[in-house]
Length: 521
Image 1 (tube, rainbow, N blue to C red):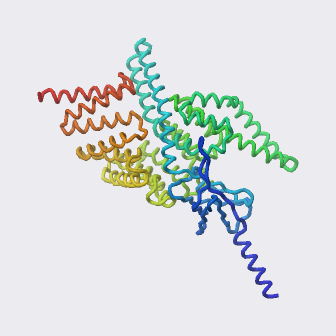
Image 2: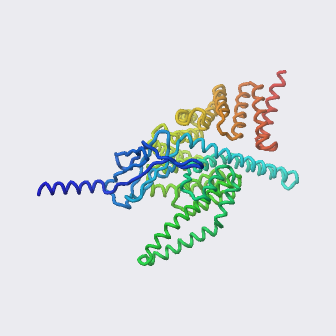
Image 3: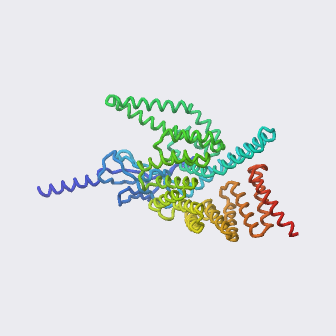
C-alpha cells in the first residue's frame, strides 16, 4: 500500500510540473512564387525557463510548460537559428495563451534573403518617389514661371519638398522591412495581389485593388457597428455566448485585415511621395487598434520624420511604451525598439540627458536578448554615436560609431549599406576634427561600397561626391574638388532639377573652387 501511495504522489508531482505540453512548428515564410519550408535545429526558449527545445527535421517542436493550464499565458524569450531571424519580431516576449490543441507557428526568414528582398522592394519604391519628386519640382517651376508663386514662396515650398525627400529614406526602410517579412500563405488571393503590387513598385494598382474590397470608411463603419453589437451582446452573454465568440473572432480578423489595408494604402501614397494621404492612413491604422505596439511605433516614426510633429510622435511612442509594459514586459524586443525611438525623439528635441537614458536602456535590453554583436546592438551604438555628436563629445561619439561599424562589418558584410552609413558617420567626425586625410579615405570607401551594385538612392551618391569635394577643397586639392563638385552637380540636376538649393550649392562650390584655381594659372 505504501508503494502505491508513493507512485501516486510521484505521478501527481509530474502532472503538476508539466500541466500543458505546447506543440509548435518552425518554417520559413512563403514569398511570391516560393513556398515556405520547415526549419530544423531552431532553438526555442520559454521566458522564465532554463530549458530550451530544438525543432526537428519537419520543423516540429514540443515545449513542456510547468504549472500552467490551457489558456494561461506564457512567453517566448528567444528564437535562435544561425543565418535566420524571426519574421514576426513581436513574437519575442509577447504573452501567448498555451494550448494543447493549437500549435505555435514560428516563422523565420533567411537574413541574406531578407536583406536582398528589402533592397529590391526599396529600389522599386524609390523609382516611384523619384518620378513624383520630379513632377512636384516641375509643377513648382511652372507655377513660378507663370508668376503664381513669389520667389520667397517658391523657395519655401522647395525647401519643404527637399525636407520631405530627406526624411523619406528611414520610413522607406521600415516599410520595406515589414513587406519583406510578410508570409504569403496567410493571405487570400486578392490580398496577395495587393501585396505583390506594392512590392513591385506599383502603388496605383495596389490602391485600386484595396478599393475593390469596398469603401474603406464603410468597412470601418461596419466593424464599429459589429463592435457595438458585441458590447450589447455581452448583456445577454448566457443566451448569446456562441454567437458572441464567433463575432469576436470575425471582428478581430476584419480589423486586422482593415489595418493591413490601411498600411497598404499608406505604402501606396508614401511611394508616390503624397505624404498627407500617407499620414491619414497610418494614423487611421494606429487609432483603429490602440493596443498594437507596431501600429503606434510606425505612426510615430512617420509623423516624426515626415511631418516634423514631435508632439504627436511622442503621443504615439508613449502609448507604445505603455502597451509594451503591459503586454510584453520590460525586457522585450519591442521595449528596446520603443526606448530607441524615444531616445531619437528626445535628441531631436535637444533633451540630451533624457535621450541618453533611453538609448542606454535600449542597448541594455538588446544586449541581453540578442548578444553584444547583433544588428540591433549596432543600431543602438549608432544612435549613441549621433547623440554624443549632438552633445559635442566627439571622442565618445567616435567610440560608439566605431563599435557599430565593427559589428556591421561582421554581421551585414563589408559591402552593405549599414556599413557605408557607419563609415560616413566616422568620416564626418574626422572632418569635424580637421583630420581631412582620414575623412577622405573613409568617404572613398563609402563611394566604393556604393559602386558594388547594392541599391543606393542616387541622392546618397551625390551627397558622397559633395563630401569628397568639400574635403578635397579643405586639403587644397582643388582640381579633385572641382571634379567631385561637377559629378555632384550632374546628379543633383538630374534628380532634383536645376533650381533646387542643393544644385545651386554645387554650382557655388564650383565657383569657389575655380576662384582658387584661376589665380594659380
